[in-house]
Length: 109
Length: 118
Image (cartoon, rainbow over all chains, first blue to last red; front, side):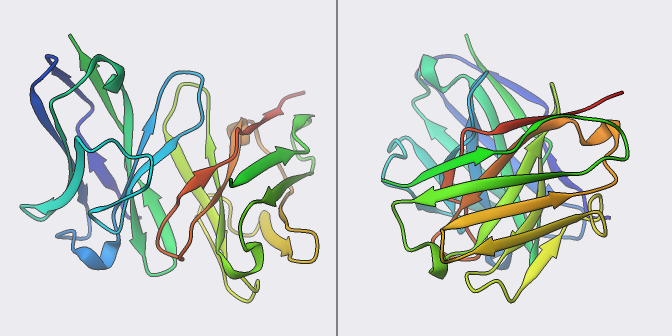
């Protein structure tokens, strides 16, 4: 059973930069896992931010970027805003099936 | 504008069945893979299943394999999830999701609640 691991929680101050990561129990995450990233605020459906490691969607704020970092997928928020406080989920592709990470609760204080 | 609207949720007894529907509009439905994702109360997202644009390929999470069946009707732009032998652990908000390619999710429905209880 593949497990995808994210930080449980992170706290950041407005204006700072923070990086969330996404690791696979099966080894290093590569582009072949097509990492996707999603944001979810309380009571709302998830919103897609990043696909295929680093590609953004038309509504993705410019401060969000995706990459691979040290064998993991990474989501970087540069210049965090108060409205970025949310849960963030990564999703990895395993040749047909997908697995979500457990999510990172990002607090902006 | 992409719109995904789920329906068919509700309260069902353990061991019962339910069929969810997702009405899609605003994109070329027959050319894009569609997925189902759920979220139990207070928990994270769980990917359940995906179906290719023409319906010829399907994949399932181990947690629902053999109990849930994904299907689509490209003539009515509708995605389905047939759920049988439901358990309390299947209680969740169920989302349908769309992506331009089979390796991305771009848009989500608003979700529909399924509660399994006696």
